[in-house]
Amino acid sequence: MNKQKLFKLFKNQSYLQTSLTLMLFFASWAIWWSFFQIWLTSESNGLGLSGSSVGTIYSTNSLVTLILMFFYGVFQDKLVIKRTLLIFCSTLSVLVGPFFVWLYGPLIESNFLVALFLGSLFLSAGFLSAAGIYEAVAEKFSRFFNFKYGQARAWGSFGYAVAALVAGFLFVINPNLNFWVGSLLGVFLLLVLVFWKPKNEKREEEAINHETSENSVPKLKDMIKLLKMKDVWVIVIFIMFTWSFYTIYDQQMFPDFYTKLFSSPAMGQQVYGTLNSIQVFCEALMMAVVPVIMMKIGVKKTLILGVTVMFFRIGLSGVFNDPTIVSLIKMLHALEVPLFTLPMFRYITLHFDTKLSATIYMIGFQIAAQIGQVILSTPLGILRDHIGYDKTFFVIISIVLVAGIFATFKLKNDNQNVYGEPFIKI
Image 1: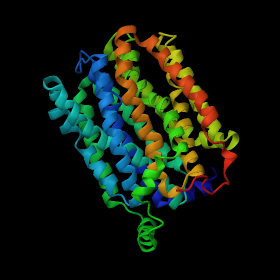
Image 2 (image 1 turned 90 degrees about the vertical axis):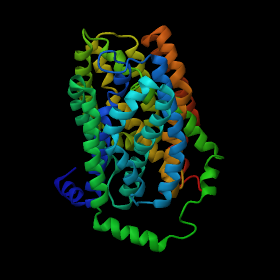
Image 3 (image 1 turned 135 degrees about the vertical axis):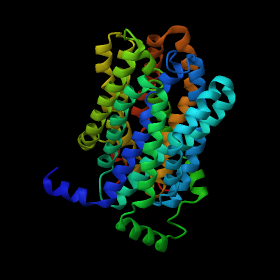
Image 4 (image 1 turned 45 degrees about the vertical axis):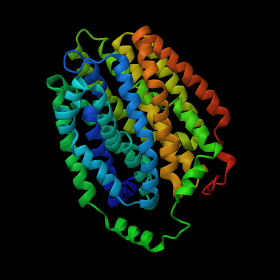
């Protein structure tokens, strides 16, 4: 990018506001979420739960999340670019510290079922469902206010990376610090969403309110029709058995697997935090590279490339037990995440009506991943307890391989529509 384009980009107030929003949200999430699984399983500075119990927590979270995501998507498509829903979600970010330290943690130890219910509601409403909405709104803003979504989303990865780096050091001192810093970052996020509204955004909102017609606002029947469309279910099946492992492998299994490769839990936790941070820094850089890859090989082939990277990354983790080699394998994550998220947004806007982009993204990408987690989290957690991490990883890549073959034959090719016109209209 030349200096003139860079200067123009940083003069775009909507780009700056969107970038800062994403950076603060992902930072407020990463500061505790990157160590959530370790906090649940660690005997020394966590709750010491079994793999099956952790799987149950992740499955329940995913079940509530997939229900909530549908309503979030529908509601946001009606709001278009209004921030009402984001403000609600950011308020929950502010409450992370009190919730985990005073309520959720003690309840898991005293009344697991009540903690399971309350935790799934809080985590889903504030983060697991909210993440997709933050991304969907950012993508809408990029189309309304003339900047590239990937350029703004990269700041989200940057925020996650910095927070993950700090998280490793805080967690070793006291895990509660991670939750309280999450609340502090949530306060900054809420203030940005409430008080910073660029002038062009205000004008666009007024124009949308003035020009909104019955045909331009998605109706409930439009959303229901989506569920009857074969092409939506193709995306759902593909994501269920690929992207679901972003949580199942990367967050439910890998942290504990990785930290046990070291001589002491404390050393493993510190190294994991640093590695996670470096990986997400690289992920932010790859957000700028993947659009170039999409232009060269196409959207569908980029998604298939993402599946290929996932297959080798998880599979190789089951082969090696040297922390240095496993760390290098973990770095493939930096390529995998943008290879899934960016082309999936482009696939949706290429083949579907853009007025329903948030809903389709939530159903086809976010909700589908949650369904996969509901189906697979607990069985794979139990499997891990019985056969260990390495063999469980081989089971996962077998599922990924089948899903990749399915996607190769069933996803739409880029040339099956006219550029700029939706291939499927509601």
